[in-house]
Image (cartoon, rainbow, N blue to C red; front, side, top):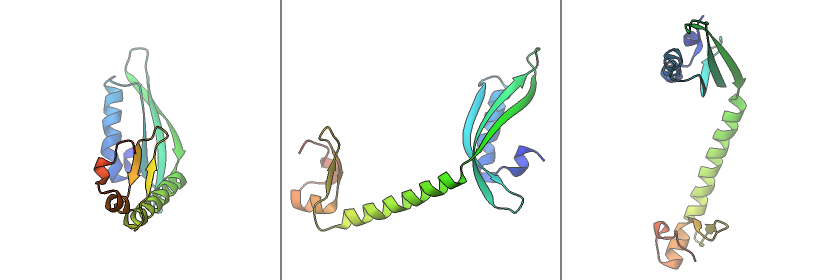
Length: 129
């Protein structure tokens, strides 16, 4: 089998572009997150780093790949993204004003309650208050 056979179809073109760039000498190495398809048909997320080894003549000889399985990290990131989306939905629809600021005093978030209470839109809230 080739890496093309086990690469998820949605990730194959990006990987092939990198390989072409390696072979053409544009880059010496590349790294990317992608999915492989396991024998049972399920996907596994990996972090891939690839380098090309050349013959003394400069001709491509072989690829060296380092693969780190990151499926659990990707699941955790997705869970966090969903959690944050739910949190922001609750905060944005809260009746009370909820405003967060960076350490330098710049407004970071400004919910609908704050818009109603302070009288200006969230897009206008990027000022010192």
